[in-house]
Length: 123
Image 1 (tube, rainbow, N blue to C red):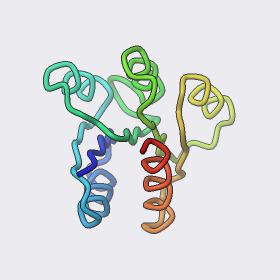
Image 2 (cartoon, rainbow, N blue to C red):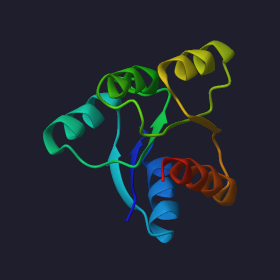
Image 3 (cartoon, rainbow, N blue to C red):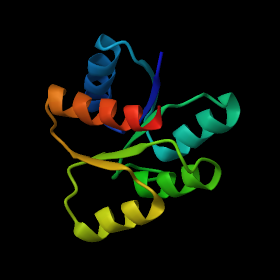
Image 4 (cartoon, rainbow, N blue to C red):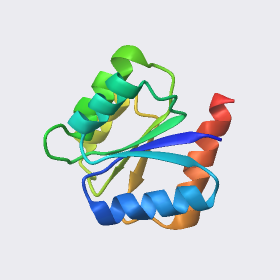
């Protein structure tokens, strides 16, 4: 079973992500901001197959979290999930190693297609 780590400050969006992914057989870990996500990663050392990070969050945003993840994990796919269309943020995230970018609100099937595609690349 593949594990997805969803980091999103909106409880509604987090629940939608969880519901969609669990209905497809994924195990879903969750955090409500980057700081909480790093605490979970550092304390529990979960095996994560793909990260889904919101860009704009309190305490630690998704781009900062992406940079932190890439310090110890350079290969796991990271999808940025956001309402953000600012090209400079997209380029910064790509520069730090983001492997995908999904704009909210998202539709179920295209969202799942991106997740599956990135997981297949990993093997």
